[in-house]
Image (cartoon, rainbow, N blue to C red; front, side):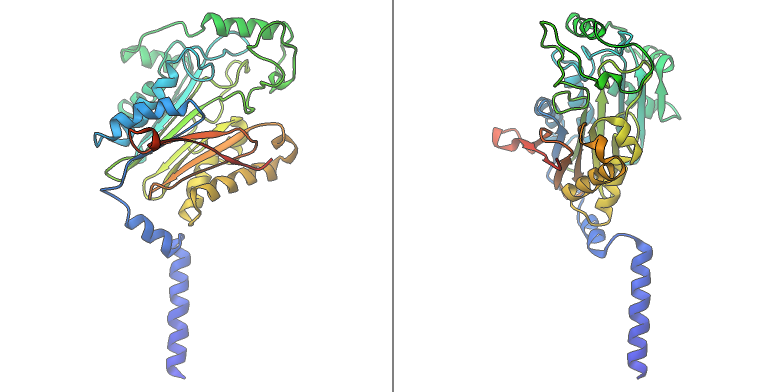
Length: 351
C-alpha cells in the first residue's frame, strides 16, 4: 500500500511540474536538440519571395547571420519598381503620399520598427538602425524620417508615375471621408488595369506585405517584415507589419512567424506571437498558422469571408508551414542554390 501511495504522489508531482513548465516534454526536447549545425533555410510570403530569398540565401550559404539574411532579402522587393505593395513604387495613401512600415527582430529578442515613414526606399534598414542605435523599438512619421536622414539614408520621391496614375484613377470614384476601409468598396476601372473591383486591398491579388523568416547554420532565427500598406488607406493608417507580435515575432527557443493581409485583423489576435506560442505548445508550423486563422474567423466570421490573411511560420527544427483565409496565398522556400532547392508553395486555406 505504501509503495502504491508513493507512486501516486510521485506521478502527481511530475504532472504538476509539467503543467508549470508549459510546453510538453517533447517540445522542450526538440528545442534542446536544435542548434549549431542546422541546415539553413529561408521562407517568405508571396511569389516575389523567390527573388527575395535568393538575396537572403547569399548570406546564409556563407554561414552568415539570419538577421543579415532577412534584411538583405526584403530589400529586394523594397527597391523593385514593379512591386506596388512594398517600398519604392508602393501605392500611396488617399492623400497621394507613399508611407512605409517595417520591422525586424533577431535571435536575442532585439527588435526595431518604423511606421508611416516617407521618402526612404529601405525602411527595413532604418528599422534595424532603430534596433541597434536607439533605446527604442519604434519610430514613426517625421521622427522616423529625421532619424533615417541623420543616419545617412537618402531622401527620395517614392511615388512613381505608374502609382500616381493608379491613385488619380482611384480618386475619380473614391468618396473622401474618414470611413475605415472605404477603399474596399468596388469602383469601376476606366481603361486601366491598375485597379478594378477584383483587386481590392487585402485580397488575393493585392499582396500588401513581404514577411521573411530565416534559420542560419548556427541554429539562430531572425525575421523581417516590410510594406507600403493598403493602397489608398487613410493617411496615418498603420497595419500589422511594423508591430512586433502582430506582423512578425521571433523566439529563438521555438520558432518565428510572420503575417500578411489585412493588418487590422492580425493586430486583434496578435497573430505572429500567437503562432509562435502555439508552436511552443507543440503545434506544427502549419497547425499553428491554421489555429491563428481560426481565431480571426471566430471573432469576425462575416468579415473573414471578404478579406485575405495568411500566416507563415518556421520552427527551430527548420520545419515550415502556412495557412490563410482565401485561396491564392503562396510562400517561397529556399534551402540551396539549385532550382530544386527553391520552391513556391501554395498555402492551405479555409474558404
